[in-house]
Amino acid sequence: MCEKHGMLGHLKARNRAWAEKRIEADPGFFQRLVEQQAPEYFWIGCSDSRVPASEIVDLDPGEVFFPRILPTLAPPQDANYLSVLQFAVDVLKVKHVMVVGHYGCGGVSAAVDGKRRGLVDHWLHPIREVAAAHRAELEALPAGSARLDRLCELNVIRQVRNVASDVFVQEAWARGQQLAVHGWVYSIRNGLVTDLGVTVTGPAEAAALG
Ligand code: ZN
Image (cartoon, rainbow, N blue to C red):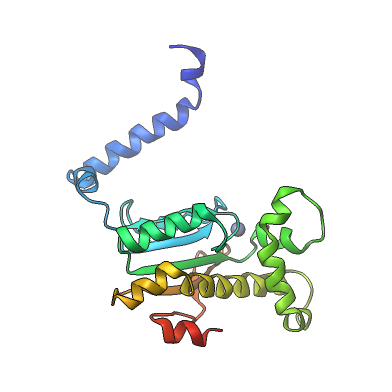
């Protein structure tokens, strides 16, 4: 075996052990996955490694479909994200889109700390827009984590609005497809998610969200 093939050997060994454990617990597990990918949930969350989507809600691979973006963004100008959203809504026909932010998000705090980082500043621009739109509310909070945590919530609400106003989502509702868009925030401190109460299940509710 050449040297390069030996790289990441510990992860390959863990993968083999994981697959064996899965088969031991449920012999039909992989066969069912091969036959069908029919997840009901589409998860739009941060790529932060402390926020493992399927583990938090205790779902198996195949039950939840997700692109992971840093931080939690549903940017309507991003073709990659839009392709995945369309695939989830039109082809997989997911029933729930969950926009899941998390408190203490490094992407959210980097957006508003005033430091220049290069290309990523451009990517984080939508979060600065959310901060500017809610400046008075945010400035009324103590500077630091209280303010940043509220910005994490406001960002999720904004991304729920982006998803709900998206053409693919609007078209799905127009043809009577069942689809709900939810906004949640996850806390790394206690492992719990909070529903922000902005669930949208149709065009009227989407319009009411602003
Ligand atoms: Zn994050």
